[in-house]
Length: 329
Image (cartoon, rainbow, N blue to C red; front, side):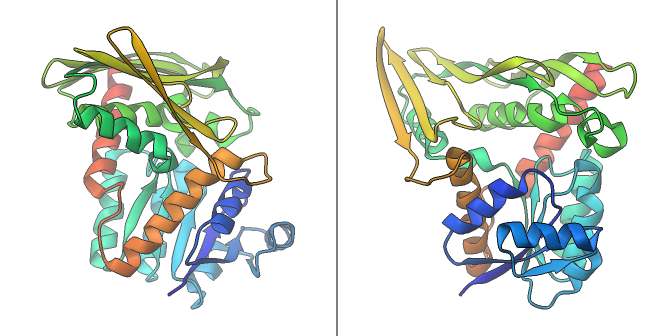
């Protein structure tokens, strides 16, 4: 059975999402919506999407849509996800799910009330390098986890971008640091007992341009991460255990489409590589992420099971982000 999807938003991420739909099986990208009909029509024509809607409301009212992918800016995630769920649509909402934990709670309450599935779009979780990393940790290949380090730092976009607007849920932590928080919690296998943070705040728009955080977990596990919208590109993650370590050079978006995991024990390293299928696109590695999460969510809808990124996972991530902001302030 094919699930029929519609996308809210026409931003730059759309090219990657469309590529994901073209790779995924059992799904049909049927419609795209913008607040401007001409923009929706131009986007639909560019990406060969059958239906263009000139308002978000029109897409939610479309009886030919089963699932909504909310690709709007962070400040619109809660409102339009709740409206889509109330309209009877399942929703895959881009990360971060909302601007704070209170909004996340509201979104899942709406999902439960309408008996629809909701999940957060952490596409990096669907790359095989993440599953391989977690399998190696579970197998005890690096002993007991002691320390987790991660970074996602890059130059920001134009200052008119919603990432530089506080009311839109902008800033480095919300945009890209949320990946580091999610990864740290995933590896630690629990929620942090204490967080600390420092940030460089933009004087004009009051969003964090750079933020560094420390998370302390039970079992004497510590995580440090850095995120930035104003630095040279820095990416990567490292997990240090009592008998070895694991390094992921590109945990979020493998640039060439090839994921890589380096496992080191007793001074000897083993490199695991995960090539992406041969796709002629500049977003090959990223598309694999999106195809995986889209196909997975469709399967969860058909089977009536919980998605990989669960309600408790999303709520936990939001609560940690709230705590980090409070600590940085």
